[in-house]
Length: 279
Image (tube, rainbow, N blue to C red; front, side, top):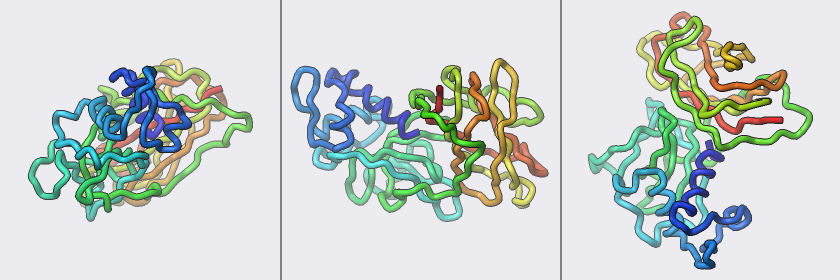
């Protein structure tokens, strides 16, 4: 997800005719960036451009000019008390009753572009995998991914290129033996060697949690056919991250998970995929 957001944010400068910053300038967090015309872009200009590119600038009370960060932060959402998600507001204050943004779920990677009143102005992806902007308490963000992490398969010995320009969306129908939906890629990935995915139950419609916890099988769709590529454990509620390595290169256009439990179709979950490895 981080790389997907980064690609969009870099494109912002083109939309505003500032020109994209160099990778070196971005990594060093420079207080200004030179555009193609030679003019310097301030942190406020850069931050506002990113918020506007998300499409939500008009919905927010924007940060004060001095609140924008010279160097953006990449952080992760902390688990809320007895809930899988966190409130995201349109203003840098708590308890205003002005929430208009989708919830931020545990483990989702965010980009902080400004800080004000102990709040962080963030760019993040909702459960629909669309990009949003909003305000959240800074204490609700962590530097490290908060959940368990798993690996499926063996990492390729040879170096792989990384496709970080791919987004995912939910399918409009169920598949195979499940009544759940799957993730559809924005385009087919040729010679895919692996990818990183996240998974999390976000709404359990049963008091008996044992009926919905258990291993999850991971499938990819290639040439219209589904192929199982491995599984990961899911023994407790919360976000998990899975690095998937494919045994052989495949052309894939969708990813799905099937829960190995008593009631695999009665819960809602979030599922993302990013950083696709290719030959």
